Amino acid sequence: MIKNQWYVVLDSKELKKNKLTGVTRFSDKLVFWRDENNDAHCIFDKCCHRGASLRAGKVIDYHVACPFHGFQYDSSGNVTCIPANGKNAKVSDNYKVNAYLVREAYGFIWLWYSDERKNIPEIPYFEDLKEGFSYGGFSETWAVHYTRAIENQLDVVHLPFVHTSTIGKGDKTLVNGPVVKWEDNLMTFYVKNQKDNGHKSRKSQTK
Ligand code: FES
Image 1: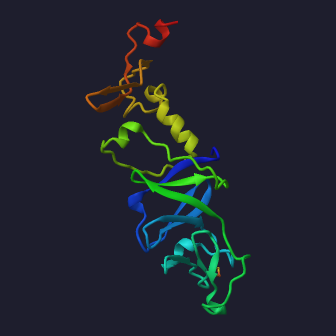
Image 2 (image 1 turned 135 degrees about the vertical axis):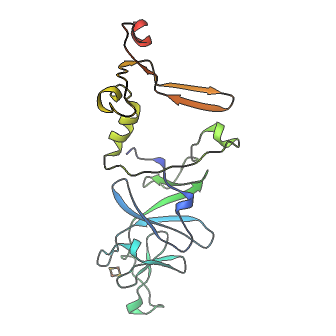
Image 3 (image 1 turned 90 degrees about the horizontal axis):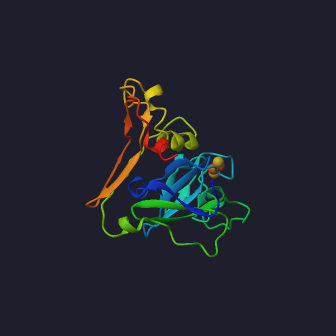
């Protein structure tokens, strides 16, 4: 991943109050939760004590409590309480896990993928969508690396060869798309592969 960027990591709706949400992002196991102001937070999902997965714990006083021996973490990843030592005992600064900066905007939870904490840019978003257009999210887990998934979505050439009985049926090997249209505030995207009757694709005619 490219460092020093904002990334959408969750739909806002996926993050509930008083519940931990554990997900893998950037190959790291992370745990998210909300504080008393409903602000989102994120720390690494591995307790600094004996390595337990924090997502199996719970939220106590808006802190993450480890399920194994009850260590409690704040939004900076610092342990604020070791129950075995007493809830008012001071905790050494050595007890901590990494934390990411997260923000909520436009219906999503965004993560600042960087160690840099100064001069953080605005969260980028589509100007058109900022102006009141409605939109929704959809999520699905594929058992592939994300680069393969993106590449696959952009590659319409393989459809008549690989997906012969579904989205690639009809032997439409000539590629005149994909086409993106923006008309009357409606965006349409379609593949536009065609049967090869001896004519050339639009792209090959321009050469
Ligand atoms: S493993 Fe988390 S408190 Fe012990």
